[in-house]
Image 1 (cartoon, rainbow, N blue to C red):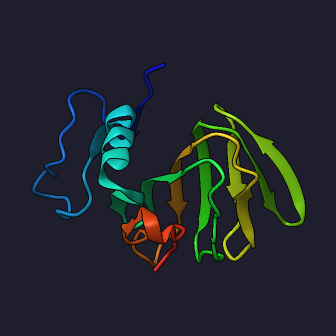
Image 2: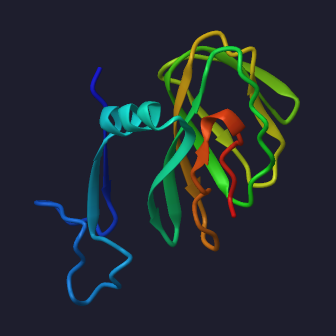
Image 3: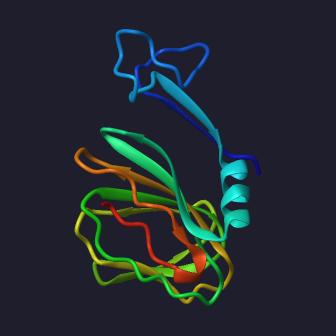
Length: 152
């Protein structure tokens, strides 16, 4: 399955570029296109568990990877977040409710809510969306430290 993320931040159809028109702030593109398989492949090769790849004032995106049987040591974030499960199987807890997760599932976590993945049966790869103004995406980290994505 090929998954591609396409963002249209100004509702403009046609060609896309990370270059902004002169009227826009340089850090806010009109649109952007990303190859999720290429992003996941790069993260696997980097020995990191988290890689942010896009940020605008209202949202940021990244890829999060947890190997099978690893520990997810997440802390609550200051922004709402959505996980899209790309690969793997695990359990996920948020608000005291446990969910079994598999590829194709979407998970929402309200800002400040305790949450984590556990009983990770297969390598888990997630597309992560942080939404809301006021903070940058989590910093990239080394896989052996296995820190969770965090809003900083």
